[in-house]
Length: 373
Ligand code: ATP
Ligand code: MG
Image (cartoon, rainbow, N blue to C red; front, side, top):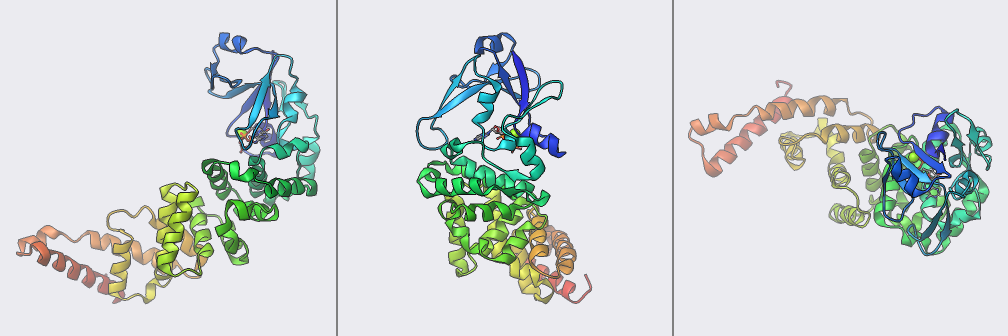
């Protein structure tokens, strides 16, 4: 049997990118031989094994055939006779279809190296159209490599458009779509993910709500700034639902996040960001009541871990954020020093205690405005 490094690890090491996960293909082996060597099977019917020490994936060389709709609709055929070239041809892009042996020799039957040098994302064969996930993968790779000057081959764009025209994209699970979107949001040019989907006529099927945001050049520039993926997501949704009144907008954000199985951390930041961005950007102009209201609405006295992300978003959207970034944490810290016990000792209790705390809080906010905090 012969083992090769394949896929992203070969591509990224040739590009000089860091390699996080390594996939291997094994030619000329049976499942029994793999088990004998201590590999653990991943699934019952799937020819993929986990290395007992490294935990990396080793797949038996296989061919595949389309047998139904969507990502799950494939039949695999693994056998010791399947060659490396046969295994590589079922992959999506030429740059993902190179293999490296343990001496560093590259097997490259579909000219991945040439496309890497020419900076082109190109499908390997018409079988590309058999898996709708590839539309999202190409868009994600474009988000990752656009800054290096990569483009998508026109014929590949056409195949993506054809895929999007049919009903294949609807067979992808929301989880799978979100997974690609989330990864794209963490790439260097996340806007390229959306622009590419738009170009493939896939945005209207996958994220129709985002069309207004993608049509707005300011939003595309904003999400391309270095920021946490959650911040970029919040900026996108703010732009997508900019025309809705605030109540409706929050409902739209919740619906979007439910439908796309978005993690709560993404949804909650988007809601906070959309509802409070204006106050955060105009912080120096807020009076004491408004400052306290902002802190209470964002629940910042109890948990302020979102604050850094909110500031990131502000610095992308507003011109001046230095004052809020300095003053808001300072005010939160001062408000936390209020000791209810001292007020209770003065005889305040129940509702009166709540009111006394509120008055003390307001006085501290006023001190900040007066510059005596
Ligand atoms: P990443 O850096 O995101 O991990 P990757 O190319 O390694 O990129 P993986 O999902 O780890 O992506 O897949 C490993 C390899 O398996 C790919 O390089 C590609 O050759 C093949 N592959 C993965 N998903 C598909 C797919 N949907 N269609 C065709 N080939 C695929
Ligand atoms: Mg990989």
